Length: 354
Image (cartoon, rainbow, N blue to C red; front, side, top):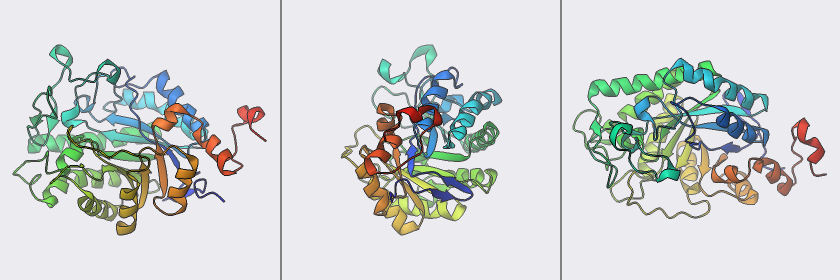
């Protein structure tokens, strides 16, 4: 019996296995609106046997996008375009999920395959952050949000949540990782405010917890809400695992169901010791200390590796990103490797190994 292919119950959802498609930006939207690329890309991973398919970081406002080609959910037209994607994912037996995000000071950049540098001239827009500290060389100084503007950002997250529900998604994930806006509020390296949103840990937690509370209250009680965190900044005096454990504890108290454990992304000079499974210990520690369901992400590529993570309780779930880009049918191939007789789509049965 494979732990990796054991269903995962979360509230009233039963997710068919423990293999999730991690949110991966495709930089292919037009004015934030999803199109055929997203339907085919995401639909293929659902056909390929993933338990949950997560839509990429989706901006809650135009200025909250990383690039001009990133997904958005700030209007009903955006929800309308996403609805067929959510519907197709569910038709294939997977759970349809979406990550809501605001890029903060890392917004207004070019596409990665065009260099990913900060935009300039008429293409650029004013970025937002807790404090006026640029991300790095060549980046503009972000606008430090006022208290009223922070209220507006919180409202943008709740508005996007309502649209995600209308579009047919079953899971919301809030992006509090990788140096984007909510992570910027959490870390003392980027949050130098002197008001109620900065300084102490309690103050730095205030906006992320507020948004989590409001989204949880809006989202149907039968369905889970996830949060992605960077468990550490990999920098002295930055955000770290003990603070992440406290954040996870507070999120659990608010009714958050799942912590998606990543790391880094806050500052360009951080030295990240990337290696197979290097972030799994964060998921293990938070699972153990908080008693909340966790997911491990980061250089997980081999079915035996994934089975070990779930089967030994290091995490409840594995989230794959680049490996799903290389192989949309990774779960089907993993099942074969682990000796699991996984159901294939009827249309593909003639090719199923016997």
